[in-house]
Length: 234
Image (cartoon, rainbow, N blue to C red):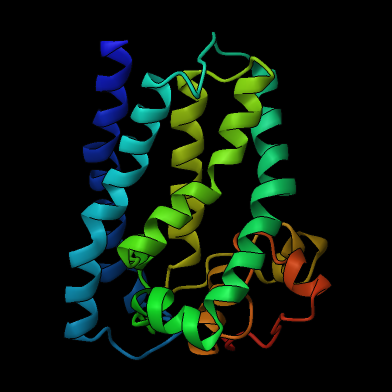
């Protein structure tokens, strides 16, 4: 158990390093080519994102440590079927749950008391993905617990799966907050656009907050008519 806790806590500096590398590459290489939103990030935005950065990195690992220690998450040996269970649980539980809660965030009260910190960033970048007000950050982490619980109840949850799922969320989060379109044009005009969002898709949300509310799977915006398909030209 102590080794498991140490590995889980080691995720904090590891994720920080990965985020820093992505942030550096985005600022000094990618965003200088063809930015989706050409407006530079504001100094106040940078300060706000840095202020909330470590909270976002720490909460997930600390929550995972608590759930494992308390026996809520029961770990077993790694199994490939666990990957399928996690991904299926994410698609069928986390995605619609997040969409519904995100719509509540965009009510006047939700925006005022919870979500305004994240939307303070109008020109997105990798560290924007981790920037949340502390209450929203706790709720955000809670939204992602069902796949862990389902996999645990089915006896397929492992430490490798826990770490992999957290990193999977990080990668897709950072991907959506790049201020550069990285998906090919054919992707954005194929059925895949309903399965995985693109950076320009999420950029529209930061510029028009009532649109493109889905987490990673835009199909929910299509179902509930909140999608805005008019991406920036580049």
